[in-house]
Length: 440
Image (cartoon, rainbow, N blue to C red; front, side, top):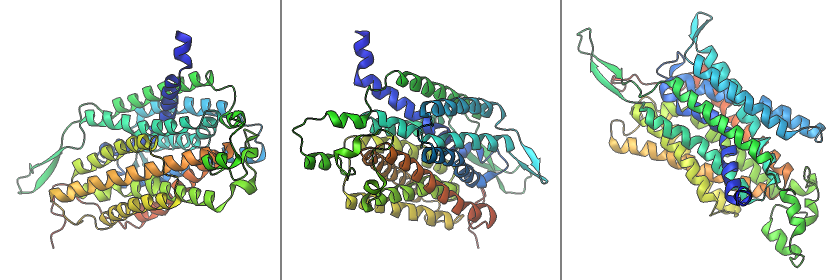
């Protein structure tokens, strides 16, 4: 009976979800905790831009892995690399819980150097996971890749639930103690401190690591691609190609696990479109919009910022869950869905550009609109990424490697394009709490 339970698909789905959760839970936790950090760390409102660029530089890890894959594909032990980065993430999260609030004077200005260094380490881990975790999932049947993306969605959901329990983001404007008639912000104390939140991150990474260890003993005897060779011999070539539209070379392209497709069969206009759309989606969700989230939300209040971060990240796993049942294979359909997300992205960028005096300021409808925009924007592009990842899974191991590469490339371009605008040229202006920032 126990052996039956172990071999059941439900157990494997759970393990895959927990494994996928560990891929981006570190970075997602850092973003969820930003509303607390901006009021404590010396970087203030510019902290999201610092996070974006550090996460972008975390692409050093994927670059190394991709180069090794290219020049020595047989020498890279994916399971060993995954174990190393998981251990590194666990250690870094423990140090983050201890040293996150320490500041260091750099060129006469205070900076949270330990926090930023540990953010970089966790960013390297998360970015590298996209070019190691995804190719590892090629060993499993196609339905598990969607479970993996649901797990990535849980990496946003779990920190959000904990952040809600933390009760951050509340402030009250009180009369100044100086008696000059001005108001001063009073920030309510959180239900538990940030270090406890980071210890929660540590525990989640441990669970993810143990799940991967269990999966290594539960990998199918044949990779997912090999299953295709055992398909019903009555299946026609046309039927196979219809169910696997990215396999332009037909069933013959599934003979090799590591490189199932030749360069000629993979780099079609259809697949290039998917990869470019994936890169653009990640540029928006991992680089451009997160860099200015504080400017788009904080003029409406810290609670608006908090709700946008938390509810937006909850939309991530919900969109991944929907993709498990409704998978849009149409190019035009993907374009239309992405266009909807793009409209909300443009609105949020406009709000950030108009900070500290965006439209509908002080209006309940304005607050609802900005929070809703973040929810829809995050949900739409989360769905797009899951769909593209699922389609690329059908193209083989190499396709999943390029999937990870384009995810990180888009994130890098988005973050690097926004950092000088936010932190050097100060294009976006912050608002002061409990002050009239828009009076003539």
